[in-house]
Length: 291
Image (cartoon, rainbow, N blue to C red; front, side):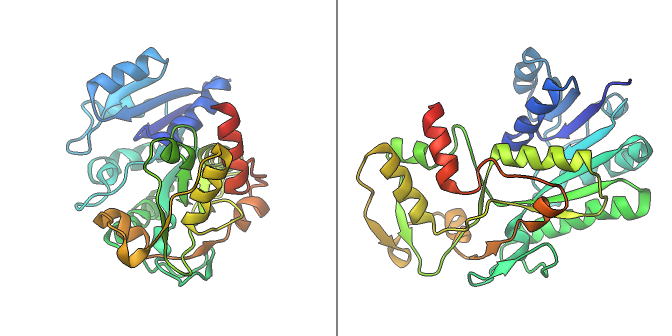
């Protein structure tokens, strides 16, 4: 039986969680990273790494794509579009006949603001921010590779990601927690291990061209998550701050420009996923126990 090889463009938080699972099943993982130093760190962990900073193509695309059976792209698009597609669309198209599954990590930001209403994968894409518009364009580019060259691509629209080292407990411990209140504001979120589980399930049940929302069962106001983290840690929650009075960066303010509840029914019905962390309470409790 031949070795399955996953090529990961952009070895970030979510991709690393998937890679750990795949390597436990004797997959070969080849990943791009932005610097030679990071590539050396990954090599020390047994991951074949090559440098791709998004500004220029891979030095040896033929070697990077050699033997690849699966592909994951998690590099965010910039002002000039998706750098993976910009530099390597032709290489991906050429490799498509040997690729059994491809995934693109997108965001629920493609749906834009819905005033707290529900969206699912059939909802119209109405991005409210420049980042969201870039994601819609990137999704279209990856789907074009499917339609024109048979690349078996799947879109994964991720909600707010949290997990080890990146969660409300850490924010509270670091003294950076704020409870900013905007009436009616809700966000969906997802634990990084549930993201990896969804990707694994999709790899086992390919459905090229499909899009999946990846989120938990409980869209909630962000101030509630902070309050719960404080309760778990046994500390007083910070005072509530009206959104209008909050000092926020442009990036942070843009998150509050969108309010929606994201349905995750498709990952359950089609992929058979059972979330390990169905809400932020379960996720934070597990993170506290492991800390």
